[in-house]
Image (tube, rainbow, N blue to C red; front, side, top):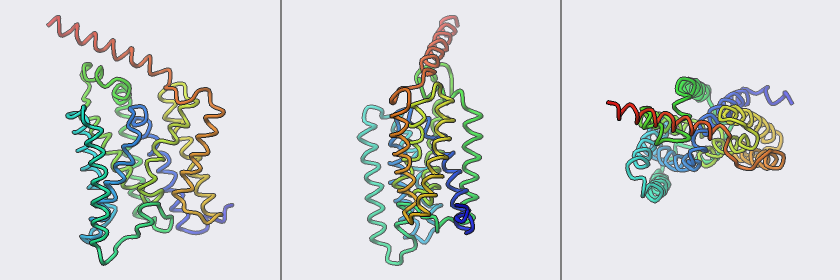
Length: 294
């Protein structure tokens, strides 16, 4: 089994894959419990437009995808907070426009400049040392962000209205979470591909929800499941000569089925949500009392 690590590209692929296995569930835990599971899929469409546009202009595809995806995430966050009543319809149009732009840019590009299959579905051969360092930097930044703002992010996840009343900087935290999600999608495309990266944000967290007793348990469990899923998927793809992205996702699907069969509950939110919601209500009452007193 250790023979797969004899080649340098597999060493890079494993390191990058394990980092992505930590980042995606870490960010996905907040998205899934906020009922934004499909946001990663939509950002993947936008990132595809960034890749195709960057190749057309002669730019580095990963950097152009990251820039366009971050911009798209900020626009999505603005629409979500300012036009909540029509956000679902507007976001759907926004996502489909992204894939439409990608198709148009690809048809206009006569010179090539990027491997379409590796971008959409991932490729171990395309992971360079610079890609590995970029993903590692993103992982460090994501971990630091979550550690520093864990409690406010937890409040926002379960009761955004009460969190705002309690005085938390909801808009700024939501913006940074959107930026992190966008960067995760754009920079993980070499591993699992743009069309499948959203699965790594959702499936490990969905597995963890079957057994987790708390929000922190969901995060840690999601990361643990992510590491197992990526490790199993990369191993199977290497020996069976299969596409790594699809193999990783199918491994995750099998893991989810097993977790549903042997887990304690199916898609039930952690018990900690009730306690946290109660804390948010207490904070809101205290804020109202302070306002009335003044």
